Length: 253
Image 1 (cartoon, rainbow, N blue to C red):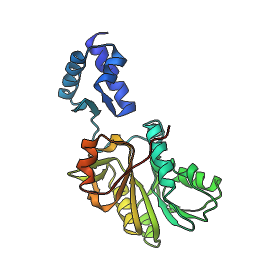
Image 2: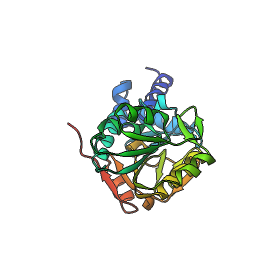
Image 3: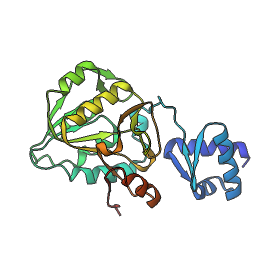
């Protein structure tokens, strides 16, 4: 395989996996580690990725955001593990807020519809699935964002201020030890901030690909919420855990 072909394959896989280890690149392309390192160096110089210890991660635009269809196929196993654990935090007669996003959407099949919950959400897909499970649901009104199927806008925020929540569950695009929680859309950022302020407890659901990523708008500092994530390398876990509480979910076997 030619170097150019390898590099295109690396980028194609990164768009799906977000993070690639060096040994995975060698396996997928049939090249040596030294060739893989040269490919990563070239792609980093071209601005397509960021090299990390033992591999690389996709470099995203500060304002770019996949649509819900794209998100649904990213890190599916990790999101399922996170969602299954997070659902166990929901207690009988809780009033909860589910942020629009693929990680929070993955929670819904695991919510016990015998808990007499009330769920407020700005996610159209979330509201539909909750209704299918016969869970009391309030879909807040406002402008529909076509890409993420989220309800946003000033009217949405005003309506959200009427409610109080036992627990708030949020998705996020980037988690950085320096910049905190970030997201590409100012309207969605404001909505996350408002929802979080209305909750007794705040949880951010994030698979490992979100760590080290930075988007356009800052939502809050890391100590604003508890992070629920899958198994992380200790060097990453220790770095972030000194700034906020991180709960690693049990691995499903």
